[in-house]
Length: 608
Image 1 (tube, rainbow, N blue to C red):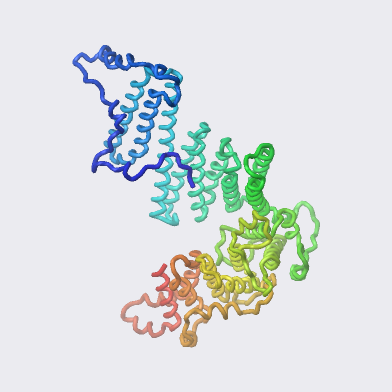
Image 2 (cartoon, rainbow, N blue to C red):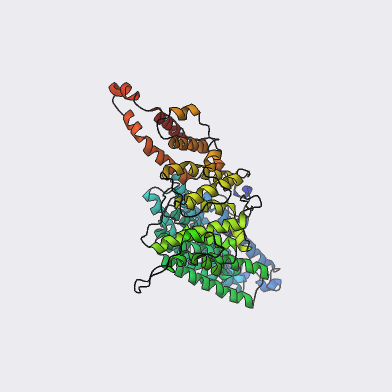
């Protein structure tokens, strides 16, 4: 993804003698030989060395000063070969002594080229060439430093993939600071915009990792810096880079929401929307791209920013103004579910801000999502404000209705296209992708909308079973685990506020999709403990240990399920940690079901 600056080299170019640096190009080595020094080395000896060069014809002697001039062509060739050599062979110098020798030889060769051609070239051409070579050396240095930083980041990830150690996070922050410093130096020079662009990619890559482990507060300043850099250089303001700028804008907004600073996230999204509109106006005046291509770029960027605005606006518009006492009449959310769209304030806001089912559904998903909350951390939103609870319910009502309106086929079952939600959104399609529907079902599980969860999970698993791609199989296992977990969390068998999908009979999801888990009936009959717990352990074993690596269920769900089961059988483990004298007596007292649970967990631990 990163822009490339150095020319590629074949393997044969990099071959060197064992234990030594590669030789310099013939032209460079030829000019690197200095005349023998006499005992009275003085200015006269230097003049004797340079005089032969002065006596040679000037560049104008060979004709016009263009690419066909043999003297200019020879100078260009020697400089090009030397710079190419430096790019290719720099990595071969590993020890400090070899690095020092490499720098000395390259500097000597470059100096000899200048002294060889300086007297014979026009002053303006010579000075321009001098600046260009210096610029190339500077770019090589920036490129090398950026590459070194990303190598260091890869080493950190190799040793600590999930950045669980505090030292790993500190190292990532040091790398981000180094990348920012490189970009600060290169920023005033517009022709080094490719270094800035690559730098934003590197910063985004590291920051996304930090955001995934809950370190959004540390990533925010660097993502903000990357966004500002993209706005500071004219070449990077073109339509070609709009999608990447929008990605950075979205990441900044997401960090603000993760840090519970939604007001700043919305403000930044509105600012970004204004910047996008500025570019739109410029493109309308002079556009080199086709109108259709430009429309796609701007539509994607505008919708993403509108979603970030909706994420906060849908809640804030409903909060009570504490300074004004004005009782509000609440609608009956159960009754309005039987009416036609739009039925609530939330659905009317969706209609005002978005013009397709795909974009509306994306807004619903983003408004309900909370990166600080894991899927198995179930329960309603934590707030005393009744209006906020109503908005959450209205969002689930809207999501359910959008799913039914766009994806229910003639047979009454859900069907989905193979296109991504982003592409459907850009094309203004009134249909939803399967990955978006799966995410919506997981959110219904988290917010304990059990009727909606069970019915929609049954529909979608039926669809996923008919697919062959790894992502569909992975999603099927995720939902199967959640279905097995639901009876253990919803012990009171609540239904939730949102109605289930049509053509659904209560319990059919468990009957169909948990029967295929290989559990002997005798095991369940002898199990004095909860049958649901044993079934969950068996389902977890089936989904993890019998599946290929490319269709493993979500790691977060697996880990949280293991921890849940561990709490259930921890007492049995504690009883095993006793003295040898009492071991036989206590072993007889351990219930059979706990032995089975421990057996399953031990296999899952080993496999994971």
